Length: 128
Image (cartoon, rainbow, N blue to C red):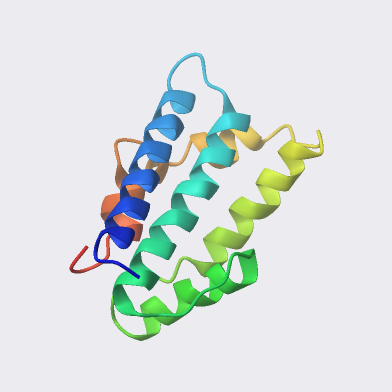
């Protein structure tokens, strides 16, 4: 790992967050919103894991475990592993053409997906 890798992943998460914010603006696009929210969360976790020296693999269960480890070690104040799982299931529903009719309310209606709150509230890693 180089010193720039965690920052590059965090920058990618921020770019993806911008796509979530675009999807949550009128007209809303909840399918895009959930996909980009999921990737923003995962990349923020990867950035934190790399910065903290937590080993992770390129699969969803490993990134969920990294989220738990970041929280357990006190690097982040919120364990987002369950949120990663929820977003992953919603993302798969969209990918398979099976999003529920409540997707708009479930995802884009939550304040955490607006105005950068994903990064500030849930995914900010101390020192990144």
